[in-house]
Length: 141
Image 1 (cartoon, helix red, strand yellow):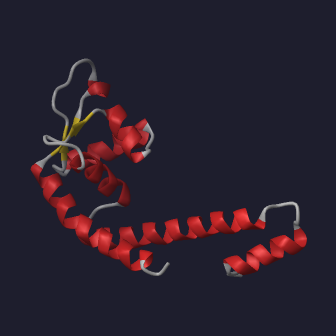
Image 2 (image 1 turned 90 degrees about the vertical axis):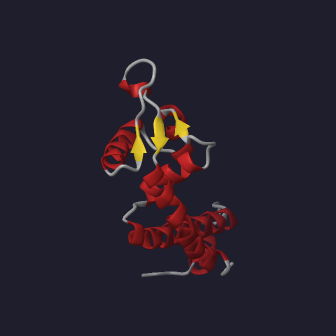
């Protein structure tokens, strides 16, 4: 059963009147649009052999001033990922030459993350494809 948001909202109004159907409509709309945007981005990223998480990490680094270096903590905050998830992601991206881990002060957990030339080139090629895919959905407002 794939009900429209309006069908769900109307059913809520009838069967659960003490719940804010208007708020539920807004949340459902945002949730569905987010899912569609994420799916469109992921489809566009396949041509670049990138996952959305990898793209977000590269884009977060690229958006900072050269030499595009962030601490792990700053990167966790920028892409809203757990430290364990980030560590796994970084290992694969470092092996692919997209990021590097220059020596930092302290132990390995504080080693900064730097965007490499290859990572910069890749994210700069992928960004227009992602934005084009997103623009098509945003235009359908």
